[in-house]
Amino acid sequence: MRGGGLGGGLASKAERTTSRRGTIRAAAGEQPKAKPDLRKAFPKVWELVRPRRWLLLFGLVLVAVNRVAGLILPISTKYLIDGVLNPKSPHPGRLLPLVGAIFAATAIQAATSFSLTQLLSKAAQRMIADLRKQVQQHIGRLSVSFYDSNRTGVLVSRIMTDVEGVRNLIGTGLVEFVGGMLTALMVFTYLLISNARMTLIVFAVIAAFVLVLQRAFKTIRPIFRERGKINAEVTGRLTESLGGVRVIKGYHAEEREATVFAGGVQRLLDNVMRSLTATSTMSFAATTVLGIVGGLVMLIGGHGVLTHRMTVGGYFQFTALLAFMIAPVFQIVNIGTQLTEALAGLDRTMEILAEKDEFSDPERVHALGPIEGNVTFDDVRFAYETDKPVLHGISFEAKPGTMTALVGSSGSGKSTIISLVCAFHKPDSGRVLIDGIDLATVRLDDYRAQLGVVLQESFLFDGTIRENVVFSYPDATEEQFLNACRIARVDEFAERFPEGYDTIVGERGVKLSGGQRQRLSIARAILANPRILILDEATSSLDSESEAMIQAGLAFLMEGRTTFTIAHRLSTIRKADQILVIEQGQIVERGTHASLYELGGRYYDLYTRQHGLETNLFLAPGEGDVVEEAK
Ligand SMILES: Nc1ncnc2c1ncn2[C@@H]1O[C@H](COP(=O)(O)OP(=O)(O)OP(=O)(O)O)[C@@H](O)[C@H]1O
Image 1: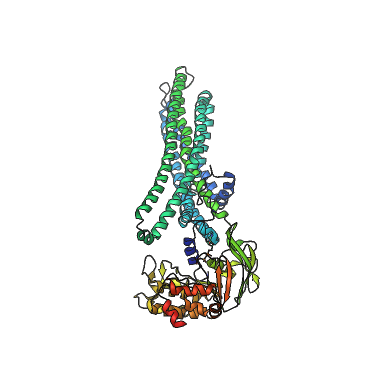
Image 2 (image 1 turned 45 degrees about the horizontal axis):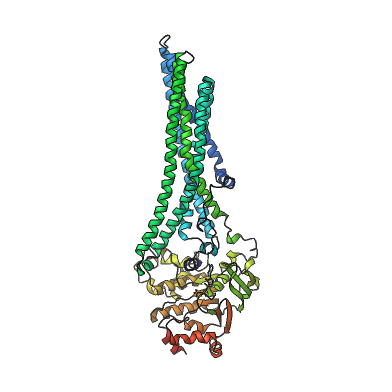
């Protein structure tokens, strides 16, 4: 993207504005759904499964072979006891072939198990990687209002954690599940043929248990869904508090933060405890059922053998096979939980993927060639929330290559106007026109490629100086890159580092000063060569040397571009071709510095306030002297 660091705009503004419009249910703190909507989940599951359907089918064949091979051993007990070892007519010659068959079956079982894990687990991991990329890409294309209303940590968890659970759908989870069912069915049929009465009694007990299990799953599913939500919230808060460590320390709020975190961890613990209670109840029930079934089989089978209705071999075979029928039911307990988790994760992932991506807005049909940079607001009205209008009929024109400064008190709507210029939002009524074309109908990629943003909170990645500068135009030549660095005076500090432009900056590397960060951000914007430039000036004052360097870079950057600035420095405001004074979402005055000063109205008030108060709205503290000289 050539856009001169739009990301910074998202980050800084999202931090300043709190969550006001909840788009993701979990983040908005709504009650979790009782269970994932399966009808909605299946198309999504199918979408994931479809490209891998042959693999899964092959996996199922492998499972079938595996399970049949696994049945050879229990089935052979009957032949061993009744055929080979029968005291009345022993057949020692049959022993070796029987053992050979068991060896062969075991070899097949081992080989198929190995291949299953190799094939399916790897496919599952590949799928997780794909899905992660897809979710991240989608989130990247969502509108700014989405970011405003969802916490960063929550989004991180959506991309990293939720997707992880999907492993169980493609990995061995689903196949094990189907394989288990298959085995149970095969064994059930076999047992039914060999001893219908005993099989049906055992089956009735197990069926009752399955019904109980189903109820248990109903309870346990929302717990898992909620766990994902709590996890995301706790991670979110943690990410924020680690990022805002200076504010926390500054207000000595370490303990308060610890309490908040402890509260989150406790909620997580409570949730895990609840699910553990549910799972332990399930295993308690399972053990009891196992005991009952075992006793019943012994009673009926023993009686059968004593009354010669069953052979000893038949009895042992029955008990051995029974395990193969019951084990899958218990496996389902385990796998069922995993699949439930996977579906809950998928459900949240789907919620994100269902969010409307700002680029594929059907209204945005106009391709935009190189623009001149005429920006016109035509009676623009806008509200973030219904019934709370923020802009009330803003109209102005910014001619190509001119500078428009927005001034006004805090909360008057300056940033909102800028957001509309950036097409982060659409007006509720009225139009924003770019060279006469309604911005709401323009393709965003075309437009944003011609937009550059320099924010007061310069946004730096963890990477080298070079990477941070060319971020706005990755195809820049070395010459273009060096030229931008020279104009923005990045060379002056970068070349002093032993690693030069390859010096790592950001969290892991060299910490740059506020002024240096701004210069880097200016170099980035110069390289992007935007037609429309957004400049959110820093409020903090820099020493005069840094200030001079920044001003020189900015002067070059603004040359010939339509610039919008939320100005704090009088030096910038005085250069503006037009100043718009915004109060409560309206333009109350407009003109140049001289004409507005002359007018003696709101602008005059704001301007002269600096003589009396430190909290000047234009200027950073200490800038007053510069004003005096400039006047
Ligand atoms: N994302 C948002 N959701 C809801 N309301 C918002 C949002 N962002 C801003 N507002 C509201 O819109 C109004 C105008 O805010 P805006 O940020 O445009 O003011 P501003 O003039 O840029 O203020 P400042 O100089 O303090 O940054 C304020 O009342 C603010 O509370």
